[in-house]
Length: 298
Ligand SMILES: [Zn+2]
Image 1 (spheres, rainbow, N blue to C red):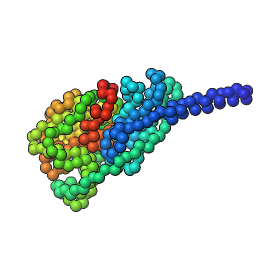
Image 2 (image 1 turned 135 degrees about the vertical axis):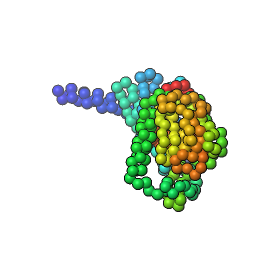
Image 3 (image 1 turned 120 degrees about the vertical axis):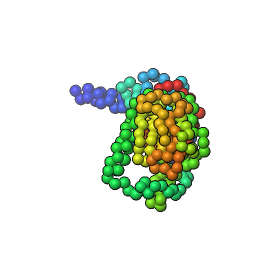
Image 4 (image 1 turned 180 degrees about the vertical axis):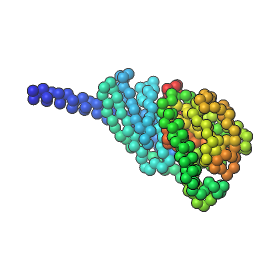
């Protein structure tokens, strides 16, 4: 009886050790080699296993990662580096082979960016604390926004190839800028502003589905486009929206017109990119196809 128990324990311990090795034996790297605050990167796991039953799952900043296997057998996923990340971010992943799985945590180094500071003056109603009715409205709008982020993880990948900016015009405010509104409210600029006159066209950055349209307190008339597998782009302050929820839009298609709705200093389009709930610099989308070996679906 005792020897049987010992045998069972030995098998269990051996299997655990074997499973443990799957993650420990994997090589992990990232692109670019020096990830920066507030950008998208690729995480690449090489399990050295040819078995087609092998899979990789993972998480960064509380967001699920979606790994796909490329022709070389490596697994790669897009991951967000939060703007406030300090020296490293933890990346946890699991290698799953049939019924075995093993986990591992890696610290990915993060380069610190210099963000500019600016002072802006807006309508005083935007720099005084919102009253309770307004707080309810802002919370409701925020919940809708979060729901889009959550659903995007379940949307199949819709984007392909190059990403383009929402307008071919100068950038008037960069991502990550620290801001003071009317000398009072401090915040961080979580998007990129493109110049434009009221009525100028705004185009979508890549293929996706219109996930949400709203008239929000801060964002004004806003369009959320879900590109699938966690990637979302958001277009704010429109004077007019030219699409409907559920509509599939192709890269470069006009989705609305520049305006000055919501909290603004004048007409422009504020463009936000997100991986799940994490806002990142939309300009880092432009580097994705270049560093991606796989660029076909899923
Ligand atoms: Zn902006």
